[in-house]
Length: 566
Image 1: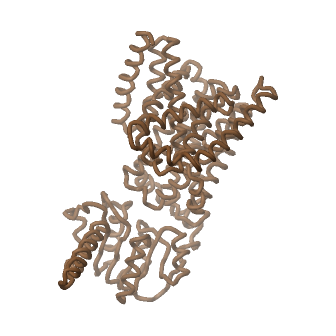
Image 2: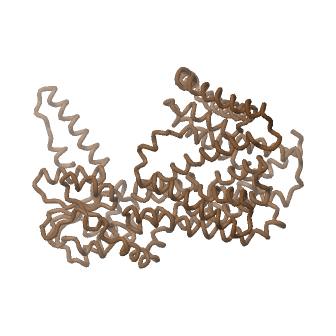
Image 3: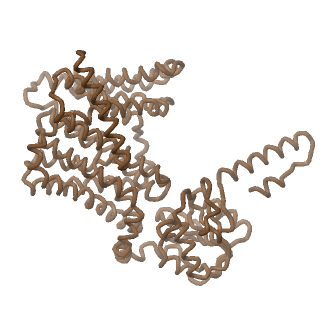
């Protein structure tokens, strides 16, 4: 590497860190910042061939490592555990987005192949960005968060299928003879057989030996991914598929989570160079002609994708608000969209203009969707009337499911998850008459058929809350764990407190918290009990252990602490 290459790479890293810092202040993912650095670098620096070669090499290594990590986490058994809504929403969103996107491409004057590529690229959403934002908002375990995570996994599976299809199409690329086709097919068969044998006999023992030296296990994983990518490229089914297969080969081992955690920073670093190369490919002078197309596709992704998800979930019986919050998570395209287009470029199916078009759509949609997801509840409040009209169209599908008119309840319990179900059963055992409320139609269907009194409803819907027999209840309990409480109408605690005041509730209220509930907040003055499931369980467990020790020593078991604290 010549000195000029070293200087330019050092400058790129500094510029990337500076632009990334500015992007972080604007709450933008590094993807947007790095693409912007690529555009900036292309206009500031001359295209030194050695520097370009180094960036391309690191970019290819980054893609191989990214797909290695995807393969590492790819568990085909997940399909059975996703649930109907995630599977139906994921597949439905992919199909409808691709179909509508293809028609938009044709209408905008793109040729058939380019329209097909762009349409497929629009179906992928960034799992990394969505999970990060939902995690920051403590919404991964909410109903819409779980559903979104489910259909993002479906999208990842579709990505894998799309990569395999592209690699297969590469076999028939121009200039490929019968010998090339035979070589690729033989390579695929050989890779599959090697994969089966390796997973069955060698993967776990090999990883166990490398794991004894933590530094070596990371080096081995990167070498394994790069070697598999090189083998895939040599055989003819592509570096991307080779890296994916390498990940799948180690995904069955007990070390995959550790590998995934340790390789994530290296993946992010190497992907910097991929996004730099994508940004540097953009010719701003010619890109101006695609601004209209990019705007049309961006509006479709930002508005159309959430509407598609909302419509599918509404048809399955979910409230419009839940569908809207889940739908906002697909209001952007992902890094896989750019990789998909780059593969098409390498196969000669699309040109650089098509890659630039999708990149521009990616920058716009990722930048805007970050704010849409961050302020999703505020957007839901603004669109509250429209969402209620959607609910009005499908009203009755679940609103009366498991409901009973007239009876008096001692406890109204919101949330029938693991903690809520245990509360329901223990309260019933103590003689309380309990009415449960849950937002998940699957839970309502499942438990109402087993004798549990449960109604479908949303704790943030004041119209629904006003229909509940809260006036006669002794307790209202929110079993869904809360963290930072905004105490607004969109927040479950704030909405419930407001509804209790409006309905002149005279009983007591209990809520569940993961951390510090902020009990000194003046809005929480009416809360009588705060449950801490993990803390309470730990206190009860320690009390039980102490009692067992006392009993073994011949003393009387002391259960006062457990009864008092739990």
